[in-house]
Amino acid sequence: MVDRTWAYHLVSPSTFKKTEVTIPEELKTAEVEVELLAAGICGTDIHNFKHGPGSEGAPPGFSIHECVGTVRRDPQKELEGQLVLAIPKEYSGLKGKYVADRDHCYGLSRHWLREHDQLAIATLVQPLATVLFALDRCGDLQGKTVVSVGIGPIGLLFGLVARVRGARRVVGIDPRLITRNVEAFGFDEIVEEESAVQASSFDLCIEAVGGQDATLVTALKLCCPDGRVLAFGVPSDTYYQVPFMEIFRKRLTLITSVAPEWSRYLPIAEAFIRLHCEAASAIVSHIFSIDRTQEAFDLVASSTPERRKVVLVT
Image (cartoon, rainbow, N blue to C red; front, side):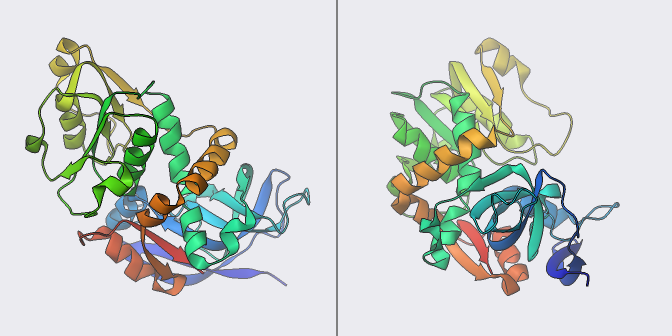
């Protein structure tokens, strides 16, 4: 008998359709099958959601990738029954069961199984791992001034980690109200526009939006001489127009960051979240049951005030 599972399929811009898909009968030695328990929605997911599946279409379950679940099948039998953070193949995790590579699979503490809101917090381990890796590439933050251009959940994580690592001043820039308690996430202030802060005044400027070049230009302008700019947001185009003279005259260092060594950074991220659980918990603002997937994505795509991380649970 062929085994099947539910899936949400992005069939057109901003539109999901619930469907069923076949579960592979055979797994490769380096693969596992995971039953989904919780999934976080990230900015890249919303970019794909708004633009739709494209001319070639998108596989069912695309593009969810911040997934926590239970291993149901493992050809090597080592991980079966374990609670894991497992990054789906093809970033297609929005389905009842999905396949992941073993080297993109990390065993979580069963501490997270106590309640659904704990599972929701556990989904932050994957994005936090990318933040920790990115900031490791930026050098010592002790006594530095840091600004994040873009304050979604990723921007909040950058602020929290920067403060923990000793940054002297942490500022965020975002036109949307994301929190009234900025200190809880390590920020001194979050302002609506770049004009509210002084140009060329930050040691590290983080571009945490992606999808266009305007926020990268802002980060370059806010960076002080000999400072560093972290281009973290996923680009939408091969070429960006940036003020190269700004980079040249201020002797700036442009840093990019993608795809950390998961086996190293996922354990570090889990430990960080457990140590700073109160702040991490506050990053998750909404939890939806999986049958409200369309509603959850519509919320993340909106400019609703104080919406932070949105997580789906089964």
